[in-house]
Image: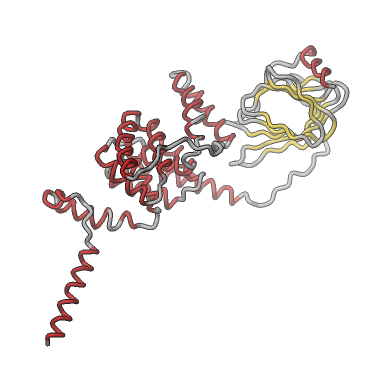
Length: 397
């Protein structure tokens, strides 16, 4: 009987231990005395369920949570979640860069307050002062950046020229290219902050950017779920509708791409067309013109210049690539010297850079030109190249 009683006692203690372990207490002690319901939801739902969900890695949940807390000014909670973030594999350098990112998206006061709390944690853990990374800067996709800058210049610059300049030159020209936080994580941080501070109208651009950088649909959905606990259900619910529109748009684009996935061959056109005289000097001919099907924006043609012929000055909203097929050509960008090109050379002209190109004075040239359209336009024509300016190319012959 004694052995049976001892066995029952041991089993009871073991069961109690398991139950205590299953019902671990995470909430601050005062919560259990003041709001037992909040204690239950903190222990059993937030930390017992949400933080355990596999749809978002613990590291990512920490990035989302710290972003939501900093952006909403919840200073007292920063230290605890910075500690958890470090435990979940977020590097000190990444936390520092997260704070820097949020200065632009939720304001300097929130970021400076976060620095003080974070420094306390770093000191506790003997983390050395963070230094800027020496890794190469992140290269943003040129076409997407050109489109974004054009939108800023068109919609912001007329009203707030200084803001437009800082947006292009500092925010995207510097901050978003810093390597201390990956492109995917930088977008994840920004998404989390926008949801937390109730700015869902800014979400589509950054959600698309995040998903283009590798964030999955399931992960994006889970960001909203995580933020709901740290910024409130209303802000999460407002973000859901906006995020759904992003998902629908990406799905439609994917289906359109799949529908047009069949191989398409543009057969060689034996005929040639005379290039418009108002945009070219000399008897320039075009052939093999093509244009990609939506959502592609690319188009191109083979252009043949007899000796001395050239384009007028012009720009392309998303840049242009030239493949030199034969002969010898000249190309010049504004305020720069004329450059000579030959067969096999590939020339890239950046977006909105004023330039011209054509044959050299003594030899014809043929190139294949490729450019993308922005809002239906792939080129802006300007004045013709004067004989005097063109003649300066003879100096390199």
